[in-house]
Every structure is written in structure tokens, then in C-alpha cells.
Image (tube, rainbow, N blue to C red; front, side, top):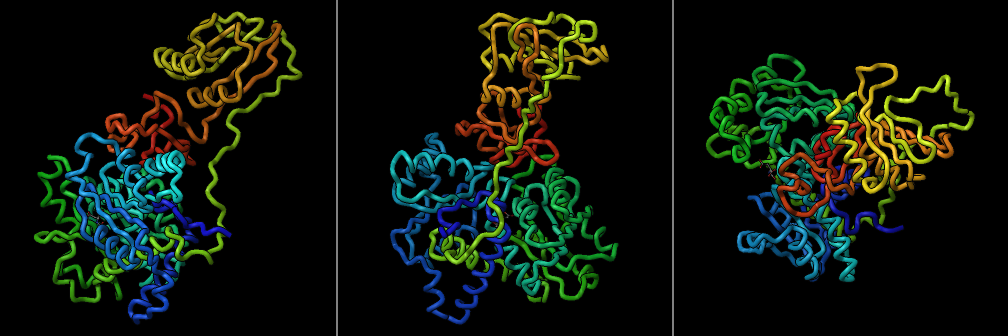
Length: 530
Ligand code: NCD
């Protein structure tokens, strides 16, 4: 059986299944022990030990821990480690991410560690690299590790956080009660917790932040979908007024560099609400641990330095664990370890259930006395009629949607027309109808395109005055490959303002919204169309 970890990218924490993460933690536990006991034989088992194995760091935002722990992990492996000097690279001449990374992949580098403000960048680079590797016959497909992308995710931080929680949970994945404190709005490390904490069976999360720095609604919804119990508090003070207090607290730094003027003006007051102080200590349950992805501010730390030498300090060990987890991750991607892992969880399959339903019309004989035709449409004898377009929208919106349909299905060059009508049952409800007498049928691909641009409509194929086939379209599981699609997150790699050429792609969520495949931003069906 092939090693499932080889050349895998890690753009979001969910790119690794729960059992793959648990395996990685078991390996990290063994590695950590071997380092503590200087057990060289075990260490050899982990070490890539190949000076041609290229690991490239590309950090377009500042970093100490993530960058240096990866660099030291790469040195442990005796691999080739490089660092792109971003300030003096061709990024400044307007080169795209795809061109830059493909160039470096061509020089024999296998793993890229990327930090950028562009959200979803690793997913896009992975897509591009596959094509580049094929065109240039590279023997190894490069892997991309997200070392923090804007406000989106920080999956390797999530790995070291979870590893540290497990260490303090006697390695039990049964349950966790965690307080997330601080800048939950900008903090990518807490956003990765939304899926990261799924390794625990029962999850209880307390969100502590002033409204200005609150966890975005979409992440709170996702936590609830993941069956976490979630409570929300405005400050540490408010949290400590009740008695169900978490034994694990995860602090984050107010990310001033990402805040607008308006919030910055109130930084003092906001920081106060999420800063721990002396008089709170006595209210904590026995054995409480504090964690922090770091850095903490030297003048205004949310975990004050007088707590360093107390039992609360979990953040220093957490930071040290960062290098261990990253050594193991690199060993897995290189295929040095992982051969003995046998997956039992099914690989994520793209949800492709039927979303174009054929309606049975066999026994329906036309009955002129009963059948009502929408105003303006004389039944055509041959051709297609697309009905119920934009039902319940206003006429102007429906007209725009019809223009989009005719463009996408290339129905602009033939005879026929578009009509805005009202429902036969309720004249206050508008709907659009497109009829094309010369078009005999639509192929499967066109049906899929129709569903993508006009979910909820019906397509009638008419021959010799009879409806010979009728289809109803529903929201498709994925929408991509359209010119007028766009993610509305300006920081997303696929946003037109970024000019990276990454085409917009969306996946439907269980609550029928559309998540951007790169940055995860949620949209309603209408919001994805520009
Ligand atoms: C964090 C980051 O960059 O996301 N730090 C880290 O990687 N350890 C958190 C932060 O910047 O505050």
C-alpha cells in the first residue's frame, strides 16, 4: 500500500483526516521522547537525511517561531533548506505567485512553506504545480504547507496546539473544554481550531472577545455544525462571573497591524477586556493551563510575564513542540515515515449527488382545457423552454439572470425570446422564461451549466407540440469554470483585485451556501455571481 502522506499539501487543517492527525501526534510523541533521551537510533528513523531534498521557505509576512522552527526542523533532516528573500525577489516586479513558485519547483525543491496575506494561496499553488510538474516532467510533485494565510488558517500551528492539548489531556481524545481569548476576528490560529478540535469527541468552546474582535459568524456556525457547544463572552471579567470555567485557555494577540483606524483608536480599552490580571488567578480551576501561539507584546502582553514561572505556563512547551510537530510533518511528506499507516476513514470524495432531476412526463397527455401556459408564451411546437427562472426575484434581476443563462448556454445567436411573466397561481410572483424553437436539446454539460447559473428552474424539451423531457435543476455541489464567478473576499488569491489568475471555485455547504475553495469564505448562491 502506498504511503498516503507523500507529497501532500497542507493548505487547511482539514487536509489531513482525523486519523492522519492522530497518527502524526503519535509519531511526534515518539520523536519528542527520542530527542529527550538522545536515542539516535530512533532519530535516524525520522531523519530524511538527504542533502538534495529541497525545503523552501517563502515568508511574505513576519515570523519568528513558524519560520525558525521549520528551518531547524529542516536542519534536523539534513535536507537542503532555502529561504526566498522576498524583498529582493521578482515579486516586486509584479511576478505572479504561480510563476515564482513554479520557478523554485523547477530547481528541485519539494516542499514549500508559505506565509502570505493572500488567503487560499497554497490551494492555488498546489493546483498550478500539478500542471507545471507534468509539463516539465518533474519527478516529484511539490507540496505546499500553509504557514499562515491572512486571516484564514494556520494549519501547522493547529497541529502543534492540538499536540500540546493532548499532552495535557493524558493523550485522551475524549473531550476538551477550551476558552479562546483575544483577537478572534483576525486570528488565523483560532480559525483553524474550528476544524482542528474535531480530533476530540466532545468539544466545548468558550469565545471571549469584545464584539469588535469577535469570532466571525461563519466560523461560529461551523463550530455548531461540528457539534461543539459554544458560549460567547465579551471579556475575561464577564467570563469569570460564572462557574463553568475552562481548564485550558488559548490566548491570542490583538493583531494591530490588521486593524482599521476606528478600532485602533480604542485599542487600550479592547486589550483590557482580554488581558489576564492578578486578581483573576484565584478563580481558575485547579490545574488550568494557558497557551498562546505567540508572539506576545513586550509592553502589553495579554498573558502577563509574572505568570511565566507558574503552573499556568503551557505556552513555552507549546512553542517548543512546534519544531517536533514540523519535523514529523516533513518526514511524512518526504515519505521517510508513514508507510505503516493504513487509512480506514474514506478519502474525501467530492459530493456529486444528482442535482439535475429528470421529471417523469410519460403519462402526461396535453389537455388544452386544463393546461395553463404562462402569459406571453404560446406553446412552441419544437424546441426548448426554460421556465421558473429567478422565481420571486424582481423583473430587473430576472432579466439579468436570463442574460447570463443565454450567454453561458450560447443561446444568443438563435431565434426565440425571453419573457418576464408572473406565476399562474400568484400574480405578485415574477419569473423568467426563455424559449428557443430551433434548439432541440441540451447536452449533459449544458444542463450542469444551467443548474449552476439558474438553480430552481425547469427545462422542457418540446417535440411536435409535446413535452418529451423535463428537467428540474437544484443547487450544484460545486460551481467553477464561469467567467462571472467571484469570491467576495478581497484578500483571497482568486479575487480579481489580486490578478493572480486563480479561477473562482465554490463548494456547497450543508446549509446551502457556497464556500470559496481557496479561502473558505461563505457566500449565498447569489453572492458568487458578479
Ligand atoms: C501567529 C500568526 O502569525 O498567525 N503566530 C505564530 O505563527 N506562532 C499569531 C500572531 O501573529 O499573533
